[in-house]
Length: 203
Image (cartoon, rainbow, N blue to C red; front, side):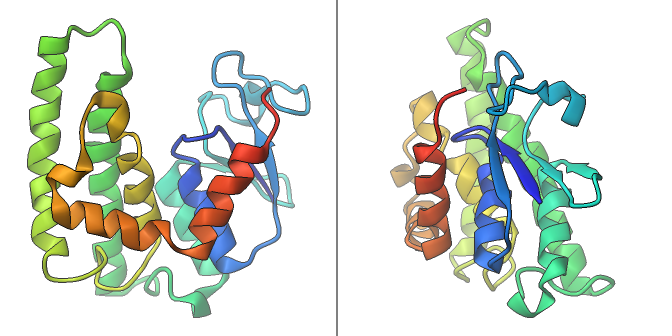
């Protein structure tokens, strides 16, 4: 398998999962501006959407969208228990969290990257994000991870929360979230993924 990624992007989430599962894969770095791959190819030919992550399977199929990718990966190694079995109520709850992270945290922080949006407008987006943080805190006050046990949802939320310093948002203002980040950050697979991405040559 090949994982197309950009450092510090949402592709870190499936990257962590692949390492958690002990899967063999090739990392291919993407330049988000030029859409060129480290191999000199055109990333748009791999994923016409133009953004990471993209997972190319050994049969040539390409899977995109982080929540879909991480669930596919978890189902390859069900004994690792990174996702409940398909068809169970617990799996639906996992999908609920993945959808929430995608739309409310990942998507909700997207406008904050834009230089074209005035700061007073960004403050409106931040206030909405803060409400979502409070909702997550209400869950994590009672359990260490989003569905109770460590799952594919946690590296995804962790990844998106690592962007917050870019927006002058200090996660320490939410001590429960800060402790959650620390729990995930010390995991071997997380450290390995972060180091591997940092060591790749720029495209």
